[in-house]
Length: 96
Image (cartoon, rainbow, N blue to C red; front, side):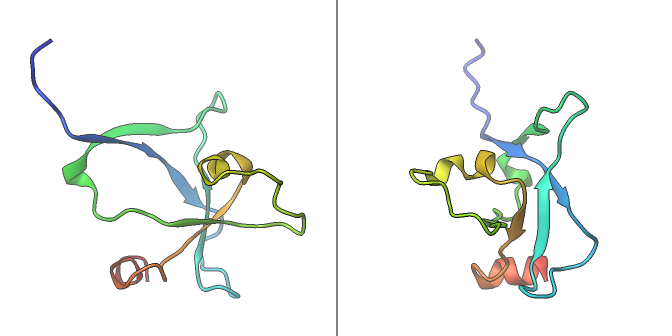
């Protein structure tokens, strides 16, 4: 062990479902990027390379939200997400 600390973050990568925003919400729609083996594409990056966090909203179907679903399980419970650029003015400027 070298005694060095490296401030980093684990990032799960997503890609656009379509090349344009959803007409109803005005938000981009994304799905997790999967590797050839079906695993999620993850990276560890230095925190200095982070511009802004993303606020993802599930793309709900016509089904009810599963009872007992916890917020920390949302990335596993839903297949697609909206990128919420209305969360703050910085996100709006970055994503718009």
